Image (cartoon, rainbow, N blue to C red; front, side, top):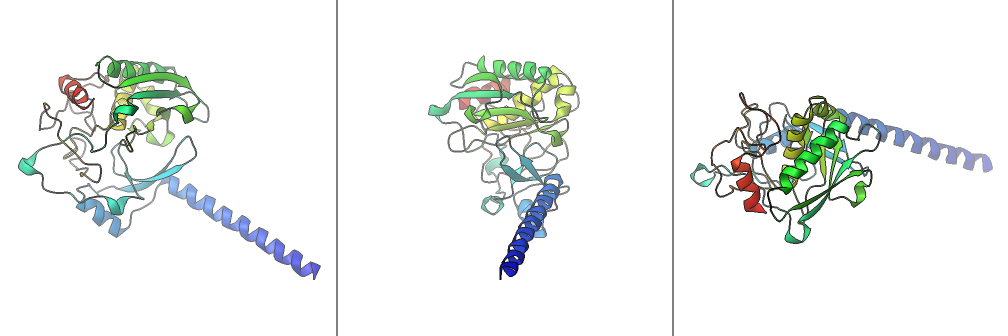
Length: 280
């Protein structure tokens, strides 16, 4: 009887180990890339998203949580978990081009603690990143809006409202999300190649991702200058900000990618200032 119990216990342990190993392998594969299903691609297409090169990628946040996104060459991902809740692209009245999400930072949360993460594991920003983040925060704070960005550097990401850190899979780009629950999106990620291109370029990318975190859309969301693809309105919305152009502003820091003849320094143009001051 003892032998039978011992064999049964061993089988359970082996089964658990095997199951854990399969789960780890599946997670590892998913972190690299995955292919959307036909039904998912149809849904994305109905949302107005260019599905030419869509993949599913998993990003691990500093708190250990993992989020799966549909990615198609832009710095904004569509969460896989909420795809079925996303709205299909509607015809916009008078063909207006729109620039902000429905969700913004509420009045009670407009003092935003921003952390430049300096920890290990490849996630910490370099001295270049620190200089760039300081410049980006200064650019926002000098606009004299209701937003008050309080910058610090360190590893206490739990206490921060917005965390800027390095995500190795992003190359020379970045990725962020939109506000929810009246709070800014927490994770503003930059690739290791961002800092390698100098302070000015790093300032641009960081300020851009922070723009998404406070609710700004790409100025060319309806037809990206990179590839001509649309991003769709989705559940987040794409609402025109009064006082800003209805066409694509290629000099805006919120353009999806650099347009010919423009430079990336992180500085706000007149329309950027108008937009941020209108919202906050």
